[in-house]
Image 1 (cartoon, rainbow, N blue to C red):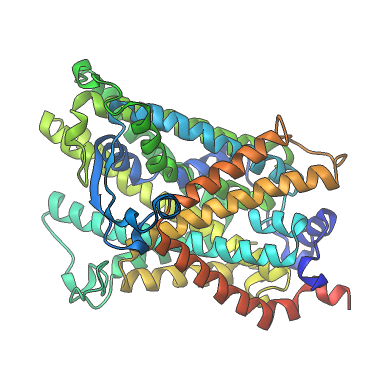
Image 2: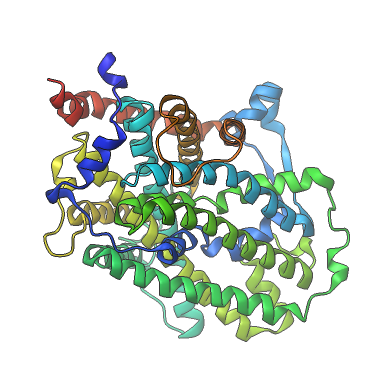
Length: 501
C-alpha cells in the first residue's frame, strides 16, 4: 500500500527529462506557448456557443441518468421533470468575464507548478510529485480520456463542416459512404462505411507533430493568426450594424441568467492547461510557462467578450439558439463576405484545436511511459526530429479510428469532467508543495495562497456536480478500467518501484 503513494521528487523528474534517450528539443518561447493555448481554447465554439448560451435552451430531462448530480442531490428524483434553461441574453459577455475570472484561479495554480516542474505531462507530472504514484496514474489516465474524447468530437465536427463548405462553396460533396460516422449519436446506423475526412485530418496533423515541435508550433501560429483575423473581421466589420436596442434588457433573466451562462460557457475555456504539456520543450520554462498560460486566458477572454457584445448587438438574443448563430445573423444582414470569413475561422479553429490536443495527449503518454507506468515504446524519441513519434502516431490512430466510426458528441461531457478533475488535482498540488517544500524556488507564485487554490477547488467541484449523472458513471467506469491496467502492468513496471527494489 505504501508504494501506491510514493512520490517522485521534482529533481528526479527533471533529471529523467535530461536523459539522452528521452530528451526533447527545447525550441518554444512565450509567443509560441501562448499560440498553443489560444489554438486549444478558441475553436469553432466561439461562433456557436456564444449565441446558444445567450438565448438559452429548453430541454426535458428524460431520465435520472441525464439529470445533473447537483439537482439530484437537492431535489431527488423530482429532478427528472426539470425543464428549461434560461439564457444570459446580452449579459452573456458578463458570463464570459465571470468564467474567465473563475478559470484564472486554476490558471494561476498551473502557472506555479509549471514554473517549478518544467517536465512534460502536465497535471500527471504534478500529481506524481505531490500526491503519489496512484494519483498520478489516475490523473494521467484521465488526461488521456480528456484529450481523446475532445478530439474525437472535434474531428467529427470538422468532417461535417468540411462537407458543408464543399457543398455550399464548390457545389461538390464527398460521397456519403465516406463522409460521416458509421454510427450516429442516437445509436442508429448512418449507412456510411467510414468517416474518412475525420481520420485524414488527424493523420495529417500527426505527421506535422512527428516532424518536430518547431514545425508544429509554426503551423499552429499560422492557424491562430488566421483564426484571430476572422474573429476581428467579424467584430470590426459587423460593429457598425449593432443596434443598441438589442441590448435592452441587458440581463433579461437577472444575475441568475448570467450564472447559467457562465456554467454553459465555462467549457469554452478548457484547453489553457495544454500549454503546460509543452514545458519540456520550452526554452525558459520558469519564466515563459506562466506567461503563456496567463496570456492565453486574457486573450481568449477578450475575444469571447468582443464576439458576445457584437453578436447580441446585431441580432435579438432570442433568435440565436441555432446551430450557426453568427453565420445566420450575418446572413440576415446580408454580410456574406464576413460570413465567409467566419466559416474560415471556424474550420481553422477546429484544426488548430486538434493539433494542440493531439500534441498534449502524446506528451502525457510519453511522460507516463518514461516513468514505467505504460509500455516503454511510448517514450521512444525520434533520432532526427526529437519528438515522441511512436506515441504521437498511436495517439493519432486512437482518436482517428473511433472518430471515423462513432459520432461521439454525446460523450463530450467526459472531457469536461476530466478537465475539472485535473484542475482540482493541480490546485491540490500547489497546497501540498507549499507545505512540503516552502523554500523551493518558484518562477511564479500563486497570490493569496492557500485561499486561491481552495477557491479553484471549490469552483471546479461545484461545476462537476452540474454535470449529468451518466457522465459520472462513464467517468468512473473509465477510471476502473485504468486501475485494472495500473495494477496489472504499471505498478509492476514503475521506475520508482524498480529503484526501491
